[in-house]
Image (cartoon, rainbow, N blue to C red; front, side, top):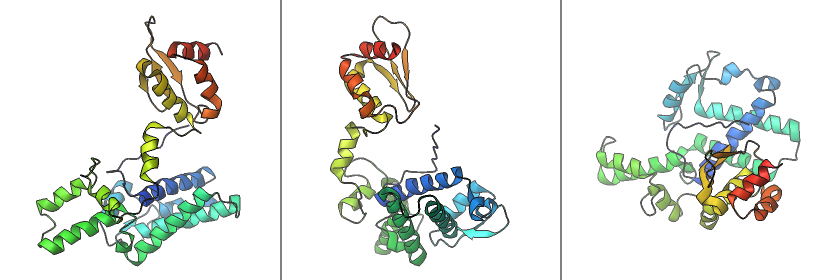
Length: 272
């Protein structure tokens, strides 16, 4: 297993945008792993920007969504057209593989994805409760209209920075959310609980429980391993967690319950 880690700017804070961003990416990766676009009569060159980095900047700097970029095949395409093309390909792929038996989570991603594209195509401002950049643009435009500010006014730059501030009561996105102007998908109580309680159906549960039970002995924790520092041992002890589904509560709870300390856990693991 490998991690696809793409960072191009501040993380999205709107729940719907985050769901569609991650869900659509997962669905497109599934499409590619299953054979790619050619299986559906589409050339990858038609949907691949000739200069991806320049295309990203060009599309992201155009709130009208009318900017076009050139693809490897020489055609020009807007960001929305690119999104619609992938949405339709994913739909075709899911219909071929699963028929009408799509799981609820995937169905929600498709529904939200289509709704966002439809809104952005008709009137971007209609997505202000769902998409960060639209909500931020609406907020900035409101200040401009009220105070007669130019786009280069330092006060607008300060608002732009304050948008993603994660401190309670400081971040503008969270304040709009609290006022009901940005849609929530996950109750705040669930978010608070997730800070301390890892999901039970992945290796995250084993990692989280090791930190909770044996935190003083854990020197480092990452996606693929835990590193323990045990009394009386000069060498650090590394426990690999390469398989995402082997550290679930179902598979490891009994083991952890048998081990009162990290040394006992390491002894159990190395004896297998």
